[in-house]
Length: 321
Ligand SMILES: [Zn+2]
Image (cartoon, rainbow, N blue to C red; front, side):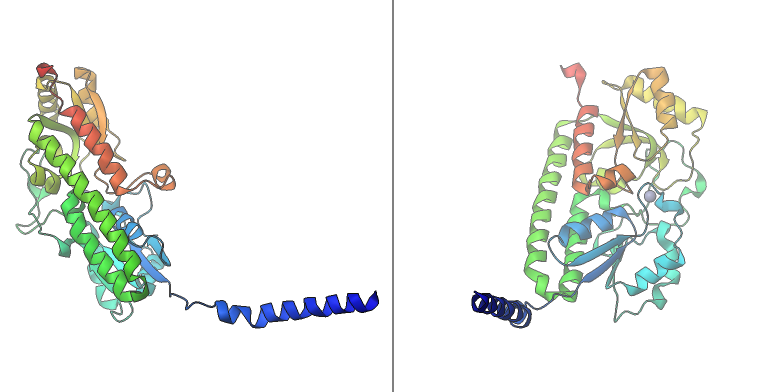
């Protein structure tokens, strides 16, 4: 009996050692190096996350959920994170001018820099159909509107640039990245088609009792709009004249739906709603998202689908029945 036990013990021992010493070697697959991506704003974070799905990639978003990107200032840790990243993605507009002062400090051999605004055709800021515009809302003649991601077709171009940067850093992931990019492009093309068909059917005016960062969007599809403030305006108090004009436009509209932006206090929309009984809906500019939406894993596409639904409601002509 003892001999049998001894034999079993030795067999077990051999099995253990062969597992320890031989199996790991035969099972070993080459480790794919992790890609570290740092982004400033949520759109960049979301595009990078979508494109790098199922690869060994870590993505850090510097502007926290719920924060206003227009007043963001980097911490020393944020600067270190940028310098230690393999890919740094930023938008590149007026709100991110702080980046210009650190660009020279970034070692371009270690960190590839992707500026979203470099991938698209830029449009100059415009005060057309903006009620409460101040003379200093446009600082110079060459101020470009920075909200490029509001047009899904721009997102396709930006995503191609991000995908290329990830492929260059981790060539082993090329096929996965390409698959993700193709899927994302298909989704964006469908979204584009939906907005295009909405715009072709509806002729009403979209009323935004808030800021207007949708120039790239409305230019693409030709929607009519009227808004309180320009895109990145710091103003929050509308003049009595602006409020009166918003109220008049709302009363004239066929279905009394007005918009406020996500993460806005919605004060002006409330004022207009009080005297017109208008319904206030949210139009996601996707500058940022709430902590709850971030935790729920909401994406750019989710917000754009919500926009599609809400714009459809706002432009539904009730007089036509
Ligand atoms: Zn903005």
